[in-house]
Image 1 (cartoon, rainbow, N blue to C red):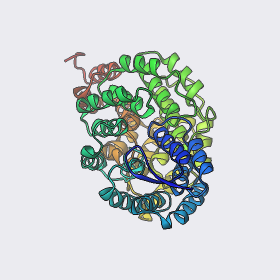
Image 2: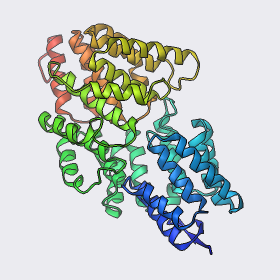
Image 3: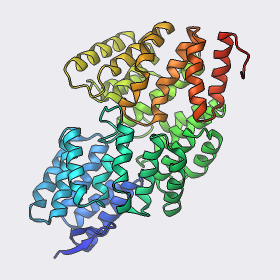
Image 4: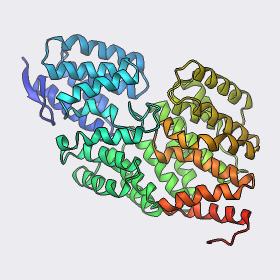
Amino acid sequence: MTATLTDRYGYELTTTSEAADRYVEAVDLTLAADAGAPEAFEAAIEADEGFALGYAGLARMRQLRGEPVAARKLIDRASELATGLGKRERGHVAAMASVIKDDMNTSLAGVREHLAEFPRDAFVLSPASSVLGLIGFSGRQDRNEEQLEFLDTLADDYGDDWWFLGTYAFAHNEAGRSEEARPLVERSLELKPRSGNGAHTMAHVQFETGEAAAGAAFLRDWLPGYHSKAQLHRHTQWHFALFLMQTGDLAGALDVYERHIRPGVDDLAPLGTLMDSASFLWRVQMAEPERELPWEPVAELSTSAFPKPGNQFADAHKALAYAGCGDDAALEGLIEALWAHERSGKARAGEMVPAVAESLEAFAREDYARAAEILAPVAGQVVRLGGSHAQREVFEDTLIEAFLRAGEGEQATAVLQERLSRRPSPRDEAWLDRAEELVGAPAGD
């Protein structure tokens, strides 16, 4: 026998009491980026095999794990079961079906339409609230501003909700409003101290405000106890490794990479492994060009997981992997495929992605002037890749290093001075010393 219950946001759930409890648990685990969400959705379905939202939730979990066939099968079952439900539950399933099966613009339109009537349906909002989500991966130049404006319209509906505060903070931070982001994420973590999403957002705020030592200390204290199968476990370890690098502890950063980031260390979605591994190793390689680094597993992952162009963020990191391991043939083939994809009209980020790949190819063959010549005109468009500023900064770092190695100190100085005007960075200050030496200016002028 079923009863009408409610979720944590006050919306009806047509299921059994036990299934509702497991579902609420699963949603919170998802929003906190904690481990156990798929199992909790499975438990909800086991308690009520006719629970449509349980299947929809599990479908989203499979999508996040990079299992599209399983995700489609589950969301189709959810759609079948939702036909006799009320408007909110039907709309929830329909919106999630679009997220899983349709193109991003169609999915975003469906999410917006559903949230216009049911704004606190947080699980539906979540795919449209991340830098790797429907807006974040749109390929649009103004997508950070669009993301924040979208969440602005919902802030009053969520009030003092721990998940929304952390998500809202992240959007502020990416839009260059880190000081407004800080109290939001601090309140989020006060309400939910073990939220992986909250800790991740705090790491981003500390990154953007140049607090490498504080960021390393925060994650050193917070990470123990965060389950290795949690959605953001590897990525928060990546942030920890970057903070360690910025404070001069490269050995510590490499140890974190080996234990928590490299391919094969977990079975989470391949996009995260590729982006974290490739960008970390590329930063190390720029810092210490003579160091031997384990590039081959990263290149192999990029080839197997992303054989064709289409995900612009994966494509850019695939180029990093091929350039890093010196696979000239693979990189040339990728560049050709990226230009063909761009000519097809399907590339959301346009010509910028193949241009980035070409600049990396030039950098790898030590033609630094050419690398800078290609990358400089498109550097301002790299936001179209998606992801966070912390993730994309590796491409700006490449431009700086290319300028420096090509002897173009004035160009490097301009980029570095702009960055340092936003936040302190010992690494950038060291780079600026190199740049000023090239142009003959006294360091610190």
